[in-house]
Amino acid sequence: MSEIVDLDDVTFAYGDTVAVSDVSLTVEEGEFLGLVGPNGSGKTTLLHLMLGLHEPDAGSVELFGRPVEEFDDGGRIGYVSQKATSRGGAMPVTVRECVTMGRFAHTGRGRLSTADLVSELSGGQRQRAYIARALASDADLLALDEPTVGVDAESRDAFYALLDELNDEGITVILIEHDIGVVTDRANRIACVNTKLYHHGDTESFVESDALVEAYGTTGQVVHHHH
Image 1 (tube, helix red, strand yellow):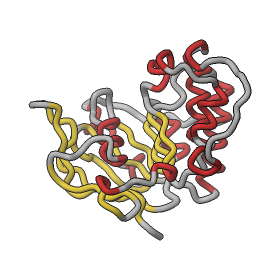
Image 2: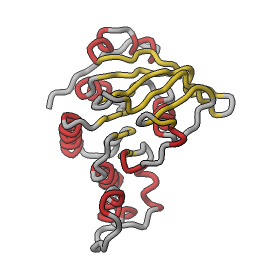
Image 3: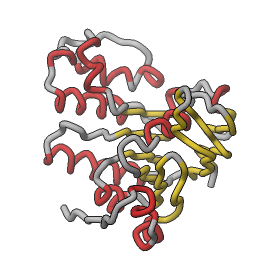
Image 4: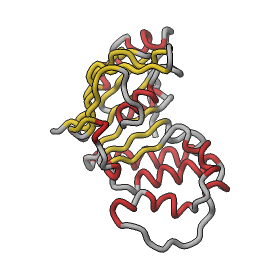
């Protein structure tokens, strides 16, 4: 089984504020990795480092076996940003064009029919369009940063059911989700961070560990959701 992402002693700071400190972890092909931690813990920054959207101040990152700064095959990655909905208003494209962006690497450009503009959709509708774009890419890696914010419960459940199916088919998934119960129900590996890495291992060992309390600095428990 090949390594999709490999971080070795990675550190990153915004000015004097350290967001990620000495983090080492590997994501294997076919894994479903949940990234958890409190607000402001560096989860999104860590994901950006994995994808080459930030350059580490120290340490190294490899993506699909290559130094991330040399990786140029974006068609292998489907990415839904935490702020996708807030940027939608600046995108004068149709829903179909948005989704078809995920197919360009495979089919090239083609004529598209008229559909609702992404900028005119509600936040939840817009997020579903961005999710569809990521899923349409036939990616080897899906990187999802709180992808269901603003999405109704029924669509959320359908999305996670589809994500399970895609992972079962061998697609690697990295998911940031504030609902820890959703993560532990879906993911088979957990990375718990708050600037530094408090846990990286299988989901069962995470649930049985004190990593959640240590990272959040408070007593908490994992709530499982049954659909």
